Image (cartoon, rainbow, N blue to C red):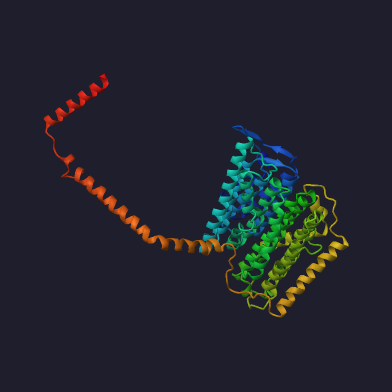
Length: 563
């Protein structure tokens, strides 16, 4: 640990000090912070650090092992890359909140007890919402409010579960749990909300596309992957997660295909990719946990790269609607290339990072005999190539020429995208760099003939399906519309139900309020009669009468005391 400061807390303290520095010096300071934290982390020994007793509970602010280290490494790397991408942005509030958010995510993955985890869990929610509000639009404000309610609600569930566990066991250690009583279910739901489980997922597609260009890059890296880590730490081998993960991989594909906002397409794609990681956690074997961790590592890189490229388009063109884009490869050639690298990585092309990570999870699912789940994951792999591997670069850069001409992305954006793209290729070409970081020993060779040929067949058939759909105009057109899925419950159904209930009970409420008004009026009139200017209690009483009544009251009190 650098200067004796725990990982994550270094970035939070540095973020608090950042406003004291002028523009360029502040940018340099924010860039150095995650790099310094990463350097310090590489020399830290495994084990528990800074532990102390709070009342009767053992607090473990820092626990370092193989699982937490790989997430700690990639979180520091992602923070550094995102800061470089945001060099052109001088919004102090966004800079401070982004770095504090990254620090909270790092602190959460090293938390060894549920109380420390809760503190960082809620700090992530509070700091990250400013990345949405920083866009300063009505839509961003509303999305941020919904996001904050859901994220804070997740923290409340986590704290409730932690309190119940402390009451039942006398310990708040963050370790493997078994689903049983309400305590573990509350914690699982808290993790599931942040991991965007089905029916809890709409905050992701609602909030991320409304964030700023640079804020979305930060958001894509930390919240959901922190939840994946929490699941891998707390619920490995929980079979329910296998089927939850399979559902997560499949349903976002259909929404992503019809979505017009390309950053929202990436949000659905993020949900799809999380499903692979959740499946790996549910399997729980060493190979599967390695697969989940490796997938989270590379996913942070290639998803950030895709959000960076779409952010660059939004920054230069002013829109990210697929129906309004096309032909931008002429104006933004470097951004186009970097987007294609991200698309190839998320699609798991051989020699790109997604291939060496995703195959671990698929192999673990097949090895444990979950044939139906394996087929769903295979379908989801084809689907992600369809909407993220092809749709994103095609509609942004190669579809009908929109006639828009703009400058290439700013230099700092290109630097961040270039470094991220190189990492995506390097990890795919030489998998030992990734496998050496995994929490369990790896004896796995991704580049076998069957793996490579099978993956190419899957990708080529998916590309053929896209080409046929486009050729015969069957592919859903890019429409200027907003798609609603489960959020229809709180966007339309609940408001409609509220209005219906009010309409049916309005007459009764009016009658109750009228009776209440009359009752209050009678009470006021009664009080006025007795206490008003003409009331009996307002009259002047003779001195003799007052003396008499005082003597009577005194006699009564003496008799009570005597007897």
